[in-house]
Length: 229
Image 1 (cartoon, rainbow, N blue to C red):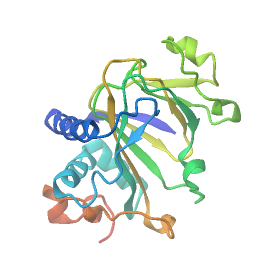
Image 2: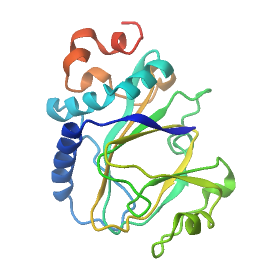
Image 3: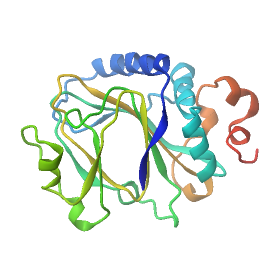
Image 4: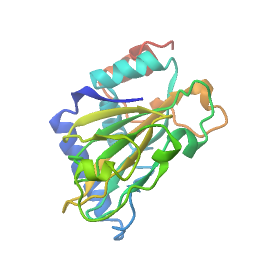
């Protein structure tokens, strides 16, 4: 299951994320042939960066979705994801199979925030049908149209996103990503949340581990999101 949310990241927040993540990425050694680079630990233990994550999750659509799906939310993973210029495609996968999330029904889901544009020629995600046929590797060749590339795989849909848009998908959703044929990195922030009781025995972070911001700091995360303190 996936869908684009109707709200978008405020421009000031999006620009600050682009600046901070971009600066962190510049410090990395050149790794352009890697399909994706994740800046693990970027948000943890930093009030400044952690506050940016909290602001992302305060966006109306994101807040409503978390409150509808989780009673006691925790962060399973949160990090910027960078696809450098020229980086190849990624294979289809599901979070459930990749991370061993065997709870039924699965509580894990991801909010994928497009910090920069993620178009068909700039590493946008492709959401596929959940079938074995869809698990073929997306072919990294010269630029292809959506229709041409779709013909090499199972039925799928481009999740092309403008800068600031937000994508939701759950742990059973089959997804991959196009090559980045543009001349600039594609930057996104990926936040995967889950139900505390479903993640026993796994590493996760408390929402409160991240820098406090405004209403969340005053009222408490669970109260704000409709759960119980």
